[in-house]
Image (cartoon, rainbow over all chains, first blue to last red; front, side, top):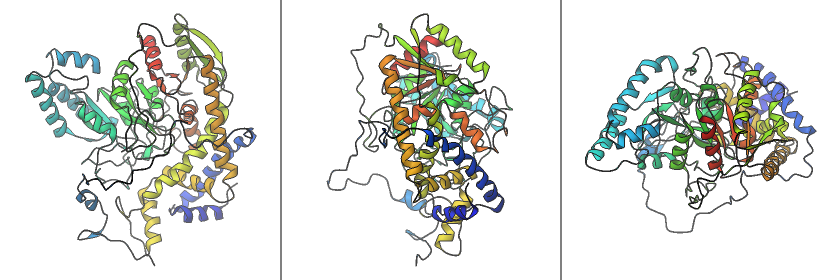
Length: 96
Length: 457
């Protein structure tokens, strides 16, 4: 139901790796799961709207266009979390 | 000792916060190496906080309800300065740079954090076997799973390693482990508790909630953590309704949905629910009801949840924080960091989500699931026009053996079949130590507490 070719494509899209044996089992597991969720095709959803949030009352809110509030957390916490850095700069591989 | 009992003793100076914290730390030292409920213990912090509490009481202050209460916190809830790993390798050394809203509230309320608890990685699982740090054992039977994903929190409370705990519930992750460990767990109404500082799994479904020994304790904790937060646009203002006359019951009729008693429900669990129905019928009217779209809930969830997971997990790429594994180029580095940092179940859900959202499949899967979700929510809305609350089982089976379902993801997913509908509809649900689950309309948690306390008597 899901081909190995498709799995390879999905791995690229999701930017994630799987080992060889993992991939083999993955095709079976994804097939099982998708087979199960396919029962949704029997449901008559023609009258139902797409439900995009759990509560109707909840609306999107935007931050006011005010001057920036003072930063209360020291940035050192974030810099310390960098996996690789040079002085206070985050180091990554070249993008292009 | 429950929160209520401890509070009374503390207030009357019959006990000190310090001696209680020490007794919990001793229990943890004795039992945790086998249970694996905690990933880290905050011994010094906990003792220091307890000392402060005792000093304030000694100086004449009246303690608040949560002063000195030793809590266990699920490892996906941020505590500033502490590691929050979500039981994943990719966040093994990640130190939280801020407090989750619920942590901020609990700190102000005087609670003490004993440590962070083990869980299924990124809250994805129903047995706590998906932790990168080894499975948690069920304190009632060490050969069995404690449920999941908040298995560490539930096991800590059930095993006497914490007075109460916080967990998170996306498809049953508070309630199913509460049922498996024989404790109380509440999934609040979506929006009742801020998700700021909760490591996101599926944002339209996630809620933080309490795991406790009694319904009363769960209520105390829930009232302490609920409320609107600027940092979570989906959180809702809560104004305590002072007009409620507590002597008048909030619930008159209770619905029992036939769809929750089909094939696959273990006879032992059915017996427990029958007993609950019998007891409730002494005071309330019991009515059989129907939630006709229940059969689609699990399918719907296993499309919507991975879709949201795949987008939420995109941030874990080994770039700004977390573990990075270098490859030959940037794309390879992303793939390797995620391949090595994320466990199999997490990657499986990321891939599943990517699949259902990819071009050509959106209408067949995601759009259809969103519509089915509306039908599941509508079922509850209609039912609550007829009844004030719903009684159902939490899990279809008793706790299974460690390893029994870990090779078969679909079999594992089926253990959430009775808990998922409440997440899809956003309604609150309370699991009792008997495994009974009570469900109420949005923001009507007080009905759950009323019924829960009655059943506990």
